[in-house]
Image 1: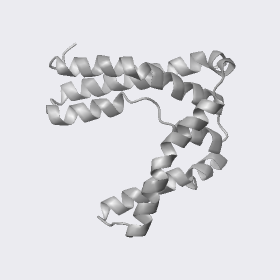
Image 2: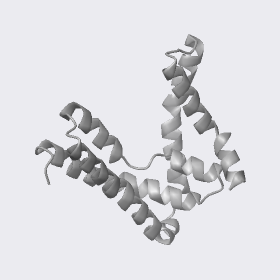
Image 3: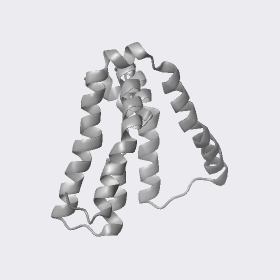
Amino acid sequence: WLGVFKKVLVNPIILATLFGIILGLFQLSMPMFVDRTLKIIGGVALPMALFLIGASISVTDIKKHVIGALTANLFKLIILPLTGYCFIRMFQVPTGYWLPCLILLAAPSGTVTYIMAVELEGDPELAVTNVSVSTLVSGLTYIFWLSLGSKGFTL
């Protein structure tokens, strides 16, 4: 566990996130040349990650990890938004706030899942399958959750 904890602490994704939080908390901004450079890199990062995921997936991997991916996606696309829905109802959150919350809770697994699985020596095949399945299925679950919200947010 100590080895994994150390890898998480020095992971560039985690460090960049913490750095961004610190900048936001202290209302600091990065120098213009750094900001522009990161915007260029950021524009390439998502397509590159999706390309790597697509190149890594195979039918064998999907069959091998179908139960794990379905379980993870049941939690990510159904249980997590349902829990958020219950809290939104319980605390009577105004419309302007619950919609972004619901969209984020119902979002498919991020491409960073695959990158972290590789970096932390996890199961990249499962991560690829999970990201692929959640991206495919999220179209249907988004429709469900957003239609629920458009009907006054009642089941």
